[in-house]
Amino acid sequence: MDKFIIEGGRELNGVVEISGAKNAALPLLAATLLTTEPCTLRNVPDLRDIRTMTALLGELGAQVERSGTEVRCHTQNESLSEAPYDLVRQMRASFCVLGPLLARRGKARVSLPGGCVIGLRPIDLHIKGLRALGAEIKIEHGYILAETKGLRGADIYLGGAFGSTVTGTANVLMAAVLAEGITTIENAACEPEIADLAAFLNAMGAKISGAGTPTLVIEGVKSLGGCDYEVVPDRIEAGTFILAALMTRGDIAIKGARLGHLRAMVDKLAEIGAHVCEDDGLVRVRRGERLAATDATTLPYPGFPTDLQAQLMAALSLADGISVVTEKIYPDRFMHVAELNRMGAQIRKEGPTAIIMGQSELSGAQVMASDLRASAALVLAGLVAKGSTEILRVYHIDRGYDGIEKKLRALGAVIERVKE
Ligand code: EPU
Image 1 (tube, rainbow, N blue to C red):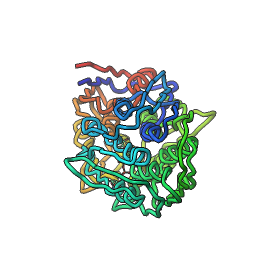
Image 2: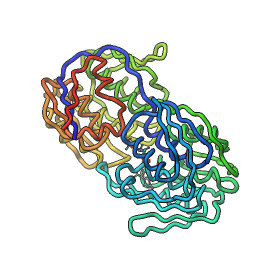
Image 3: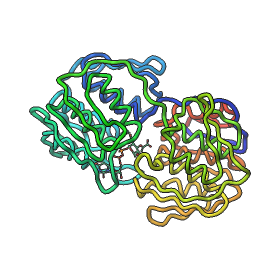
Image 4: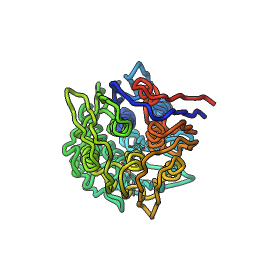
């Protein structure tokens, strides 16, 4: 398992380009199963999760070819309908093939995703939505068995105890595009990745309106065709680099970030004394000498994203005063707290809330990456800590950040990947 060694305290300068969004590209790749015509996706990040999804598409009869950031998918054999445990356990987003398989092949056998280090992640809303469209679903031997003689449009309320669901909305949307009649999804996820999926499906010939709002209206069509589509830039990668710029105080220009997708974060940073601005397509961060403490709560989009909670916490570890961060999407997503504390942060967890007492500095230490975003928080902390930080198990970060150490090194960071 590879590890990162980071020498902290370097000023970062230069331009960094944001890759395509992992969480947009994954459902888009699954959606290519909705047609037997070839689809070309551009701006696809080169990530472990993307390779897992393309391997799964291969198992499901698609021919997939990558050339640079372009991925061409061509579904040729529609007789297969099983997503095996081996692939789904590596990445929950594999579950996104359920909707397309059901819509196109009338049946699917998809492994249940199982546990996850960031907490319980149920799939009841996926099932509720697909059942409403006329799928018969049962769970047997760790697998979801879904079947239909033909999906029909329905009015579906897709909210649960924690609000909307991103991949649940994706699954139901991908099934509804080929259902007979009109489907309305209320409390649909509003995340830019869902809007991107809707735009992609429309480019394939679907009829979806309301993308980016809580109400999606889908007029079912008989079939979809191939298309050429560019994946939206990754707002979480952009947010991570904005926080890197903020914490290291250098002059980083971030290319390809869409600030419109990061309003909650930009607003939060203004509260702590950092101004994020965009000039000629480049995003920059200006800040005063000290950062102020703040309170932040993660919420579904357009609220503050849970996928930036750990990275924000790394930044608030160095703010003046006491900050309070509450996690409302995954109440157990705090594995990074103990690791940040090993680096000198003072964070106390109380239920789904972390209380962060800002410190004047962090110190390098050996730490363990537990999940994707927790790893990113440790990298940020390592960049500003005194001395050397060793982050073990960085395979987590390879799931979601395309060449993060290369991008940071190009900005002047001293970060090395050691293969073990
Ligand atoms: N939920 C239910 N029932 C369901 C589905 C979800 O109660 O059937 C709950 C979840 O337990 C959670 C909340 O609803 O409390 C939101 O979960 P959601 O379904 O939206 O999460 P997801 O679709 O599994 C995606 C991203 C995550 C991101 C979340 C929240 C992808 C592939 N994954 O997951 O990304 O944290 O939305 O924004 O899009 C990451 O990239 O690091 C990551 C974990």
